[in-house]
Length: 217
Image 1 (cartoon, rainbow, N blue to C red):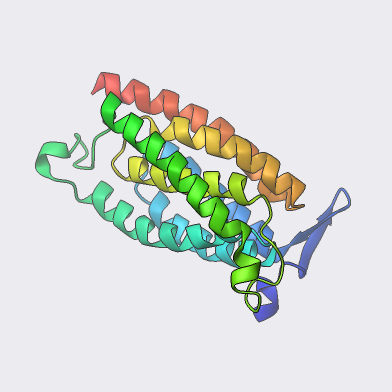
Image 2: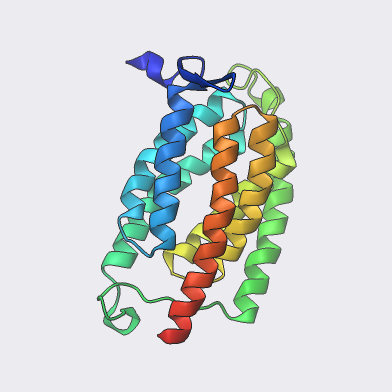
């Protein structure tokens, strides 16, 4: 059973690319969770719990350490996100008695982006030196420390926006997904790279769909 969580344990080979059990199931659960989010389905958070556990194991094995740390945050926010969407305050509820879609103020949008960029620099510098700080745990240097840190930090920002059902969350996810598609392709987890390319499409759909619902509401 433990071998299923080894990135070297191959599930099948497609077009010459060896697909591990770990990458396959992480990809499948991740894609389904994001699609449900774009459809404003509250159960996206529950599927997301499964995805973050699988993704954390995978990222550790391919030395994307900031992404690995991010999954711990995602685990907590998936639980909180489910609660916020399912049981909102009466003043924040839509006709289905779930959290309604809103938008960020310009001030809050600026503060989130500026703070995210500062945090990206700090995390990137730390990640760059992880293998020197903790050589017994991180035997190899971090791959793409600043790029990976940007997607990590901004994923946190986007998740908070998604938890509060802000339309802008989907535009943030689109930027994150574009960078992640490139990064995972280079790190040779190609199905996960394809998944993030699909996420780009879903993020665009989510932005359009949530904007429509916001205006209608």
